[in-house]
Length: 129
Image 1 (cartoon, one colour):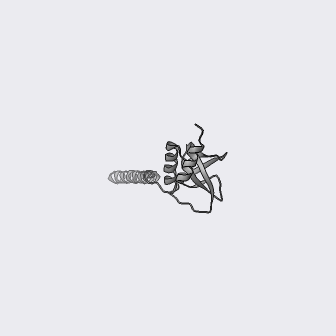
Image 2: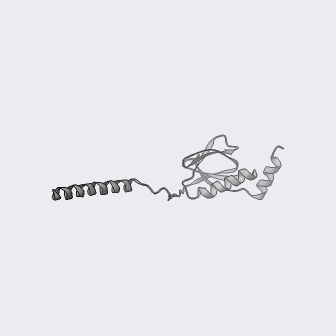
Image 3: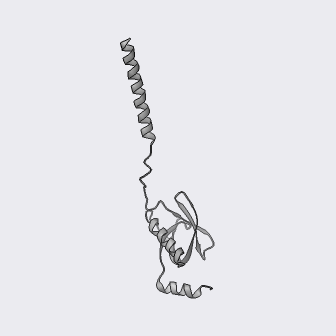
């Protein structure tokens, strides 16, 4: 009888340990974000006016006027945090920016950087009031 109780207790302990290991293995650490970098040949789009369209997961769809198509930015890329900040600032202050896209996928934004003061002045003069 005592051997039967020890066997049952041991079996229950093994099942509980296996269950705990299974549950612990299935949990993901969602606090750590893994950022990637992407390098490649780029194409200069020139002076553009950004407008954010929609965001789905780590992809931001946006328009870069005067281009008549949608572009996207992969927010999982390390360099795009800076690009997004520049875009938000440009939208807020109604300023143009300069943009580059990747040569292998001309819809993916590679780099955003500020326009020169001369370009900003020309943009402000050309705006319809």
